[in-house]
Amino acid sequence: MSLSTFLVGHLFYWLQGAQPPLDPGTVVVDLRLFFNLGLCALLHFFLNSGSVALAVSLATGREVRRVFTENLLWASLTNVAGAAAAAIIFLTFTNTPLFAIVVTVPIILVIFYAYKMNLNRIKQAQQHISDMDRLYLSTITSLAMAIGAKDQNTHGQVQRVQGLALGLAKRTGISDENVLQGLRAASLLYDIGKLAIPEYILNKPSKLTDAEIQKVRIHPSVGADILETVSFPYPVVSYVRYHHERWDGEGYPEGLKGEAIPLGARILAVVDTYVALRSDRPFRPKMNRDLALNLMSQEKGKAFREALERAPWNTWPTGLR
Image 1: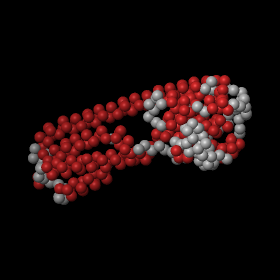
Image 2: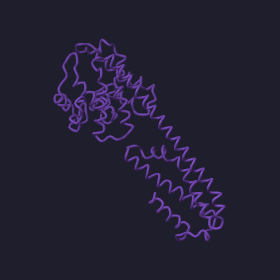
Image 3: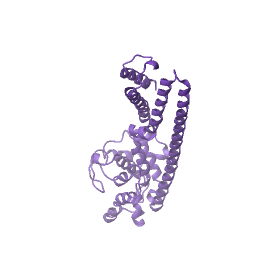
Image 4: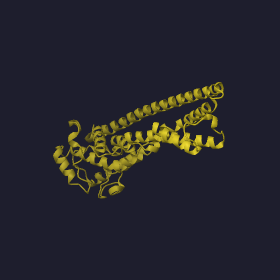
């Protein structure tokens, strides 16, 4: 606020061709004055609000433009109105103080109540969004429980996958809220396509045949098709569809390769593999952590982009490991 006021104040005096302090008795009230006042009022708003938006963006990882338009742009009207009231007071107070008070007090009150109403509106909108988020997450959790009830091999696994996926994303420096929120939902719903797979295949006590494997491999596409009917505000569908793709292009359903695989899907692939290896299966017991990580590290450049030394497996709670 101080810096933007300092800069804009100097700009105004430069535009007016005057030296501070400005004497209201010498000011020529003309189009040039109103243009300079309007320009400086807008510039002050954008400098001050822009710096706030930048600070919020750096702290939260959200895009600067979105922070500004969603939270600060509405204040431009009260800012300009306040500048107009200040100009009226300045230009008229010396000669007609009563007129200045009579004119500006209602303006100031209108500005105050407009600001208060907008603030209340934003708080109500934020509360609504918070309530919808809770409902949305509750619905997703219920769907995840339905998947787990059908597939006994992965029952109770989604919560572990979600915790590990979010932990791995943050540990590797991902701060984009879209990616994190998409990952939060996709890590619960990534196996929703298994609802289309017969239970005798999902719970088969022996290794699957080639034909059964092909039926299992449809679940990422089926899951993504189901989720496409939901208007997610985050990239959930692509993470679900491609979480079985491989870095070398040998995955499914589309054989995507390298950077063509969405980042969230690559994180899900790592975590899903780890949790699967660390879980009991009808045809094999679960592996210990070191053996699981050793097998996964051998897939560097194949299933995964790089080795997993940076993955924070050791730092997570024992129940998640």
